Image (cartoon, rainbow, N blue to C red):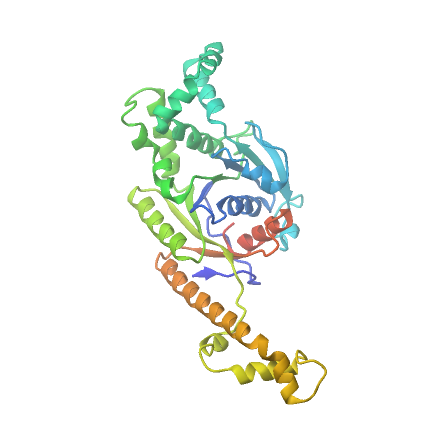
Length: 360
């Protein structure tokens, strides 16, 4: 059942035990924004989360209004329940939590990997100079995906000197839905490249994390035909590959303008009712003469009725798309369309919605 924006009651989180949240979605659905909001929501009660970007677009830096992220983990935000418009839970940390971020650089990740497993040291820098890194990741894209997913899985399992996990949760802003299954299913990608050795072992270790109960793959969508169909197909592919499916994150949900009765009645002849309502609202000018008022409001009637019909049509289409998503029988969350765009304040508002609806 969908959780809708603005519901007052706060739900218990749906993803207890999940440490790696993979967020994907069709291009244009706002998956980077939703991933960032989820990272904030997961951090709100004294937790530390890591938000990872793998596509090199620096979308995280743009959202948080900071300089481009280097290839290192750094704190980009702090967050408390109060900042999300929520009361603190009993026992939660008073100081709130932190969001750290990492923009993975494929070239640096491969050099790091080569040094870790093959002890190349300075030789790795030489490979970089002659273009080996670009060559390797171009002819063997599976290796690139092993590096990207491997970094996220390592962060999700990393422990500090005290034996506790370094991060309570890791959120990966992953590639679009059309290639998310292949991206995550790295074991099959590298099977033809290396059946033994460090690369094969790394792929196996990554798959153990990705197919465990500590991982959930969430898909972001809009209430439109193509994004919903791609979401339905995406979850089917994830299930077929044995990857753990998460929730449906419906973004940019527009509030209803007309109530159900008005939507149902929009196809009728309501010119006289609309004219009367416009006149009573004072849009007919100062005159009290009916014919003068009618002449003044007449140009407004047809545009208003047309807008009402368009709105009713959109409502019906969105209702059909919600029905399609309900067939997935997965936790579904709805985030409102922010008419002013998503600035930092809007990002915290979306995080509050996710927290309120139980996504974090």
